[in-house]
Image (cartoon, rainbow, N blue to C red; front, side, top):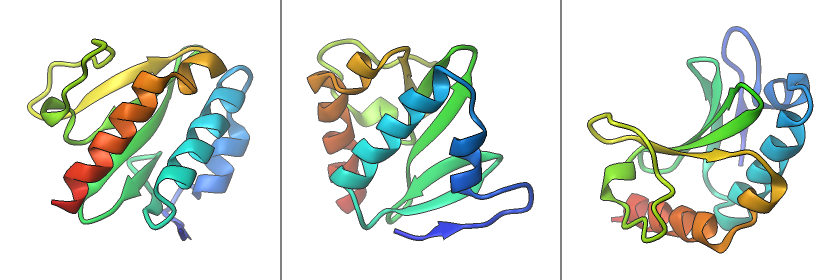
Length: 120
């Protein structure tokens, strides 16, 4: 995976500049994405780290005291646990407030499903 710079920062800097507790949650999310999909390209777009395969797959967003993991094709995901939120045409997100939520099997399942969609 390669970190690309965009005016205003790079992915390393974005993660480093987060305050607690966001930094810890975001770092865990980043490790999870990298381990699940080491070939995805990491790039700062619109001021946030995006993970790109054939198209956009994930975005990590800092908001309030939490991290949102956005799924570009979120409306196509099954989401059997009802974690996804949002009302847009295609994108959905999961709100992550703790390390436990990052590590939840349902979050990992959504990540795997989003990666499978990117292959199709």
